[in-house]
Length: 208
Image (cartoon, rainbow, N blue to C red):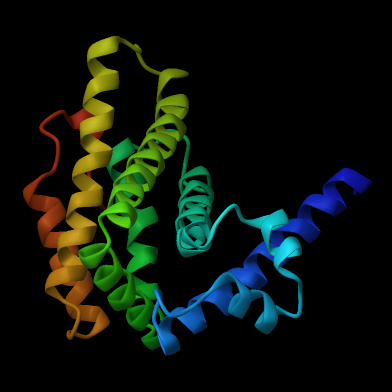
């Protein structure tokens, strides 16, 4: 492993550590009551060092988006290359439901919803991050698809709509099933996906 790679791994590890500490503080004290100074103190670093890894407190709040998006990209790339994009997204996102069943994640999700409901500037950033995540996943799927199919502008639009619809399903299932067991969440997730499944068989595929 090269020195530059080692530095990047070390940097990402520190970002993750700071992010986890910040999340714990946001949960225990509240987002508004937690300062950059608090986060730096708990992490054993200076505020100056904090700003080497994050531009603001809000950026720490959204670190989970980076981690989750990276995990979904890896899950997509691990799927069979000739699999229909709808199935690839479906199976990759099912793993996300397992995380929703963890108590700590549920608490953070509840806190995040509370913050976005009361802070318009954070809500605006949230929508921007969601859009960026969707675009990244769309590009990964599109790259896989265009090597073995006829790639045209119209289908690219369909791809974007496909990714957006799956995100909408995941969000609605999370909101509607917060108090339900994991098995019930998965059932509703699958039923909702079946209801919005693409009409084109080359995009939808056939579930196992």
